[in-house]
Amino acid sequence: MGEVTAIEKQGYAKPIRIFHSIFALCMIVQLAVGELMDVPEVEDHHNTASISWVMPAFAHEGHHHAAAGPVEESLGFQVHEYLGLLIAALVVIRILLAMTNLPGANWRHLFPWFFAAGRKQLGDEIKLQMAGWKSLKLAAPENGEAVARSVHGLMILSAIIMGVTGTFLYFGWSITAPQTATVELIASVHETVVGGLEALLGAHILAVILHQRQGHNILTRIKPNA
Image (tube, rainbow, N blue to C red; front, side, top):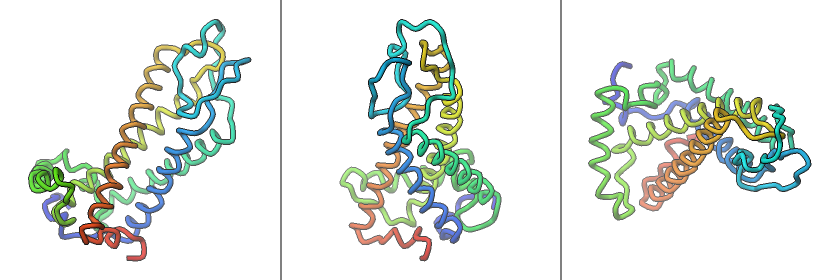
């Protein structure tokens, strides 16, 4: 499958539809848990935060002996950890599927901007749909396959970056001293990717709702039992 120009003619193979449902559920739960779980604290401090466990280094002022992770695990953090491992396994499965010829599976569909044909199709679809976006009306799904699949690719790429940076923070986060510049940089990347993924997921869900309201019945295209 060397070209992406006929993407709109293909459906989604059943393994891809099953993966999509499981991956979407895991990512939504993971983002929610990450926002609500307790923050690993400096020793002898008892403040908690409900936004994220990656917090600025001011929480560690006055401590001079660093003791890097693994961080102390609360129940929320354990759920976050195990979900992260499950998502990592799902990403590996998706990478393997991307090497097959299953409809909708090929990695060229997930990252069309890397190829001339994919970039052209993305550009054509975006131009076609821009007028509709302004009035919250979307073009038919078959006229936006490259856009939809590139969004899936961005989500998978975000999950990979979140997993790599989260693993580093798990072993490198200090609960007794200010964080190193490297840890703070990686924490910033982790939080930025999380925020970007939340925005992307929100836009994706909004698009599905709008498609459904317009009678496109887009859910039947990705339901595991469709």
